[in-house]
Length: 89
Image 1: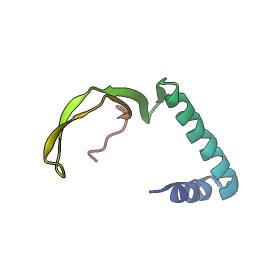
Image 2 (image 1 turned 180 degrees about the vertical axis):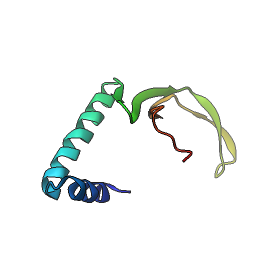
Image 3 (image 1 turned 30 degrees about the horizontal axis):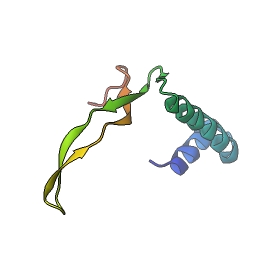
Image 4 (image 1 turned 90 degrees about the vertical axis):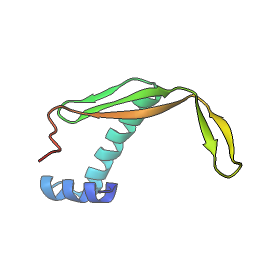
């Protein structure tokens, strides 16, 4: 599912225009993004938690150059689904 499909489905389910749904989704996603940039977790009850995780520096291998390289430490976004979500069904 992409953003357009999410907007369309939400519009049909709620009876709200796609333009208004798009505005709301843009605000929600913008808020999540700005909070993550501040390295604060975003917890959405019944859905999951977005947080910033640090990946430590590690060794890798460059296939083109055929030599070992050091992959520097970096920050990544981690998503942990809520325990209420059962993906096995």
